[in-house]
Structure formats: structure tokens, C-alpha cells
Length: 415
Image (cartoon, rainbow, N blue to C red; front, side, top):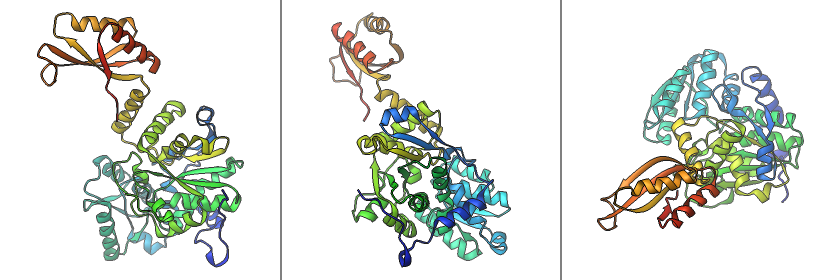
């Protein structure tokens, strides 16, 4: 497949490599120059030569600081004194609030009323005034534009602004300086600010480099726009950072001109990628931050043998959600299981079953008895036992031992 190149002349895009380099000079010393590190284990797992850009190590744990700060530093004194406003319930809110406060610029963040309290608290902790308005992002966005007009605030868009795009492009500039041999970049894609900036840098420095965007299957908004499709867009995705229903008008121009393809990834691969990054790289990422790895897991043949760079774009994941992801991954790998066993309701029945678990070296975590809500005869008994094994083979040996002892056993599977 031929790769796309930077358009010239009248079709030139509103951000150039020089704009990104200027942004880097502005923000230098105020954002972390995050490392790009090789992962031998993930390379062996995927068949690609995998390099990871650790943007989850920024102070607010996401790359969004770059574009926000580049925008703030280009405001004149009058605009700074009046303050800035944005509509966001995610990383953009925190990045803008943090740097606005650091620069002495008032910031107002409008969030939907349904925003989790932890995100409200974190944003307020960075010095912003949070306004809760509406039940959806669209309602919050509309209110923020009203406040902008009424009070003379400067609106800072999370992605559809050349200054933001140039700031996000510094991620790609650092990657290609550190690892000039990259031949493929896999970039999480929501509104399109990050991939627009990175593609501008990559295609100018090396026109033959392949730039691939990654969207969640539940939110294929940019895929729909570029490919003129009409797939449904919505749902509960782990990758909420790229769960955008309407991509930017400006960023769509960049994606259409520079991005070679868009890959859609499912929720199971996103969960697997989050879990692998924690287990292997000992780093916490949110669902969007794991999207690049999820793409490699989804389409291994496509990236096999390539030198691939991807961005761990954010690390702001709710701890309870992270715990659920890890436990579900343990269940899918066979290291954690719930077995449903049919017993006779008589003394010693559970003891004899437990003895088999002991003989097989399997740890019992929880036991659930069910006598009433079952279709079994009155003397029948269903017992669910949650247990911990070493791996799938260990679990299979346990189930074989139970069946040899004449027990009817099934595994309660995850969806």
C-alpha cells in the first residue's frame, strides 16, 4: 500500500513541521520529554519491533498538556487576563487547568453533570473553576461557548485548533529524534489532534513512514468520515479518551491527507492491552493509551516484522475499573475461574469436592451454595467455586479430575 505524503501548494495544511518545532521551543522545560523505550517482551509477543512513547508520565498523566500549553503561551495579555474556557471531562481539562494555573491564567472547565466526582475534584485541584452543565458533552460544549461569548474568555478546543495540533505534534518529533528507524506509527485516534500533529511531523521527515490511526470499534467516528461509512457510534468503551462522536473539521483534513489507514479495535483487545502493559511494562495506561498495542494484538500479521512506534497517550484510569480489567484478564487466561458443580445435598459433599481442589493444588477463593433458585430436584445442590490456578492447563487438569470423580462441572465463562 502506497503511503500518503504532505500536500504542497494551495492544498497545504494549516500546521507545518516548522510550527511543531516552534511549539517545542515554547513548551520546552514545562512538559516532560518522555522516553521512547523498546519492549523486548511485547516485540516477541506481537512479532513487531515495538517502541513505546510513555506520555502517561506527564504530570497530569497525558499528552494533552502539550497542545494546551502551546495555545496558552500564544495568548496576548488581554486574553490571559480574561481567562480561558474549555468543555472537557477528561485529560484536556486537567492539562489546560494545570498549565493555566501555573501561568496565572484563570481557567473555567465546563463538564456534564454526569462527570464522575473524581474527575471534577482532580480538575479543581489543578486550579480550575468547574461548571457542571447538561447531561451530555454536547450540552456542556454549547454552554461553554455561551460563557465564552458572554465573558470574553478564550476557548481552547481539545483537538480542532492548529495551535493544539502543533503542540501534540511534539510527541512525534521526540519519537523520530530518539528512534529515527521507525517505519510505522500507530496513534490512538479520537478527535484527531494527536495524529494530525504526529502525521505532519512524520510525513515531512520521512514520507515513506506509515501512519495508522486506531479507534475503538464502538466509536468509529473518524473512520466513518474518511471512508464515508455509517457505522453506529456509541456505547461503553474502555477507551473513553478516544470515544468521540464528532471528529474535528480541521483534524479531518489532516487525517484524510496524511493518515494511511484507520484500524478499529474491540473491547476485549483493549482490555488485554491494558493488562499486558501493566504486567510487562509495569506501567498504568487508560484504555485509549493501550489502543496502539490493541491494534497489534488484533492484526499481528499486518505489523509483523515492522519497526513500530506507538504512544501510551494517557494513564488516567479509574482504579476500580483497572482492577476489573485485571481480574477479567486473569479469568480469560484461566488463572481465575468460577466452576459450577452439581452436588447431592448430603453431609460431606462439599468436603469431598474441596479435597480434589487440594489434591490438584488449586486455591479456593469463594464458595457459593444454591439450593433454592435452581431447576434441580429438591435434593439437588449447585455450588459455584471461584478458584485460582497457575494457567489454563492447570485449570483443565482440575476439571478433568472432578469429572473422573463423577462430578458434573462447567466453567462460568465471561462474555
